[in-house]
Image (cartoon, rainbow, N blue to C red):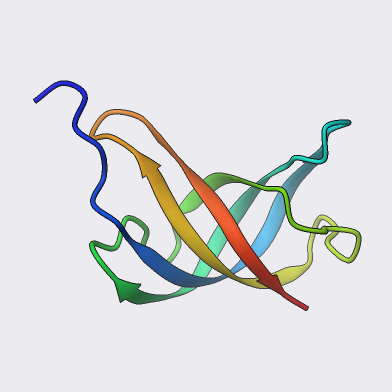
Length: 91
């Protein structure tokens, strides 16, 4: 079962930004404390009260530590390691 990828999936998350790191290449990494989860399709890889580390290439100029954001997210990876990519952040 090595090299097994996560099934296609998307969820809508609402969470509080705990950590934020903007990088020179346009990528932003952040840690979120999840307050709400709505699974759109595929398996749901996150749950309420979980803290996740995620990344995005979306514009994050309006996001600061402590803000509450709503975002469409996809889990990319396998059973032992993966990442959450924020596909669209709502203002």
